[in-house]
Length: 447
Image (cartoon, rainbow, N blue to C red):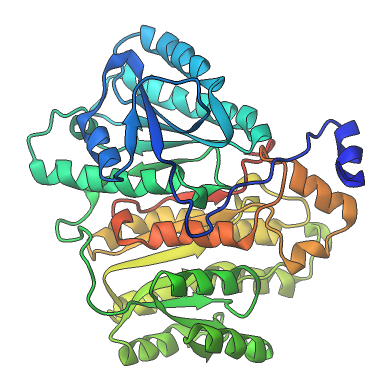
């Protein structure tokens, strides 16, 4: 234990476990354990798991469990709460370090009874609290909600919808049970196959897809661009003139294209629409560009407020408006916006930044239905404390506290954000839209 860890151990912070991240050959464990509340298993869930081509076990063994699914899709009565307690408690002693626990449940819906909806919401508090308990072992707990009670409980006669549900589930299972979600914990995401357009089911694309990443010269943006290149995208990196050298250097390495642009300029959307014509439209837009201009509101210059809102929020709205109106985003396209934990919990000295990032969350939720009709999904990713050159400049104790107050007891890496964006950008994530997924290791407070 080094000096810093000893110091924070005295303050009550446990030494963090080294997180197991994806290295190219450790995506999923060989076995997944499945426990069903009330002993009622969803056939659709089993089908989705089987598509992952790994062994499914329904009885816990003495060996350490790396991945555990709790099937909570069938609320019966008050005893379901007792079942949730007893079955999950029994499983905890079997969990290995860096284990993945995933709860599958029915989303709150008019199709459910009041009692079932109450249970669905109760699972959120249960899972977030459990995630905070598991974090000291580097383990995570998350929830995938199915936004169609009839389908997940096998009452639907629509085979197409059933197939869509299992496909949507497979995508989420593959992410949350894998090492790609190492810094994502205490989160819930909703898959809603019934709400997506009928012709938006994932298909294999013959041509290389084109992605735009703003703020791609360095930090998280550069890592996103690199990850998307690995995923097979042709990446166009966007950044401002002062970052030209770094941007060009990165794009040459990735065999992509550098495009110099101030996203807050009133003509930015038009310029990107014209660029889209050269590539037969864009398949993915990642709005990563952003700034911080921190001061208490009482001392904040007006131009700091305006600049932060213009770059972090208004540029996203304006650029998307132009691209959508001009048909520059292809059918099946994805829009992913960068929000922030501070947009959810707030932060002193960041009223401008938090305002802009909270606005992104509202914008994404509001646009989802409109874009569904155009076969486009829109989501947000909200990073917490991520280790970058910027956070390295934060004063020592502030930086260390920022690292330690997550359930996982450490900061995340840019690749954690990039992996989450790649998940939401995947064709198989077509049933996820209008949502914000946090990449924060689950902050112990303010979340």
